[in-house]
Length: 267
Length: 325
Image (tube, rainbow over all chains, first blue to last red; front, top):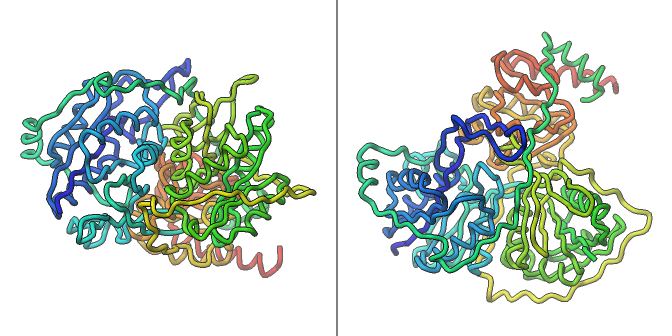
């Protein structure tokens, strides 16, 4: 049964980059920073593409932001997504606002599945999927993972971690929870958020990037969605975390033991 | 009155230690807002958990139904919302565990409230309470204002002192809430535990983590963990390689731990790993690379091969345990 899947592609600072807080705490220093698709969203796009390859259907990728976030939509299109939607928005967003926008897109597109990253690596809020599912009244599973490791044959042969039932009305999700893995069965339509171990996203190819240029990206103004957005999580001030002391080197294990057991009194 | 409801969590019939920290956080919040703290236990056959929570001197509401045997945000969120209304709570607090992070945003959405994840402190001046939380993998701390009637907060358990038991236990009362099972579109199928007999990673006194340097061989880590009754953790690289279970990953996107002793064996110390363990009291790092960033946060660093250092450390621990020192 073909699936229509909506995925997200947030533009975030490169997670490998050094993030520095501005002296007045009003934001981070953005000069020289590079941007990329949120790694968790990239996993969501990959899983959506695998589902489409196995079952057929369509993958629609959405991003919310200024004109520059089209580049993250293009990455998902180059991976193989079919079309994009950019909701134009300048300024801060909080999870409730993002979920409200996505809800409008979901109502318009009516996908069978929404797959999104469990969190974005900038705000680290881990809320949008949950709020969206609750507002839609849909089945949901956060932190989607799989039993097989990322080194397994299942992964190397790009098998879906999310398993659609034969009749196409439900999907099984293995979740990473405290103390182990949990399996849930969701009646479609459903919202799923991805954890790190669901898959290894494909690398975009030159033909993929060429094709992506011709794929449609629709632009929508927030006003067109008929919603009024008011931020409810307001960042007032940023700080740098205090540095942890450390750096003491010991030469031998005996010396380590003398310090740890003898001086610090632990172990 | 801005009352505070603490949503407690349980595992294998026991109150989770993280929930005691959530109770501690609620106490710190109450000192600022002046509200009453009460607790909520949801599940099936959870009377003992409710008694344990009430022993901390707070009134506890319990919703005990077969339909709530397995945690699902779809069935639990309406129960928490009903309990919050019954308690007159404007703050709902829980631990930022996998369950808490899954559940609490749903509660906020259901109540038209606002949610903050991973709170590490309550800040702000006077009447105004701000929530301090990490962003960018812990490289930045943000003080955020929550603008809404209902404020829902998941707290990082390692950052708040666990509440102590009180002399006089609070009351335990069943809260009449119905669960409409026909409306639940998510079904529990199975749970596969990964920890075995070891202590919970987030609750253990000693954590020993292995990374790329183990090359997939965790036997020395396991042997020392056996001796110290320690939990085993891992870096993301080791989990991705399939050497350790996913829920053992320590880091900003995995488990955040703050044990008394953290031993990092063969872990270079990527930023996101450090964000998950730098709250440990004592950090010991073992790595062959003297330039590894883990050494910058380690209290004691040994440049060496973990397959030589760990057995040597184990014999010293064993000798000391034998002598009873």
